[in-house]
Image 1 (cartoon, rainbow, N blue to C red):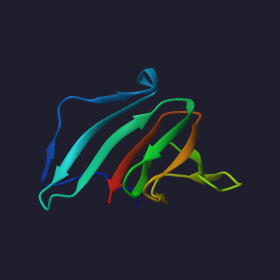
Image 2: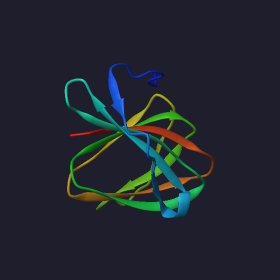
Image 3: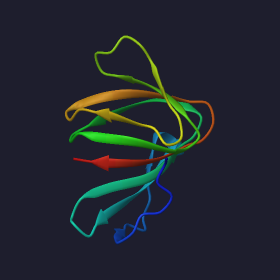
Image 4: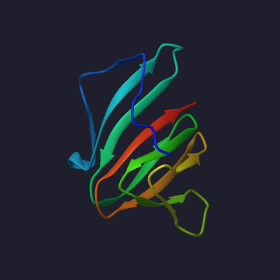
Length: 105
């Protein structure tokens, strides 16, 4: 089941816009100090780099992803998640809007 609400967060009102607007997100800082972002990836094939480990949670839509070093694409549907190691990268293919929560750390 995908997350529908996030409680007790400080939200950055300025959006982060990547890849000429194909990915837009807002940063959240939780009461315990942990970080998340909530966003959408529009139809595209993109490559993201990671500094810290990330867990990508699909809220709506779907995507295919390819982790660095992997040979096969995998899919992610609403309510599913995939993990990306820190200091790594992943490719993402989106046919229709992919709404996500990225959990850092």
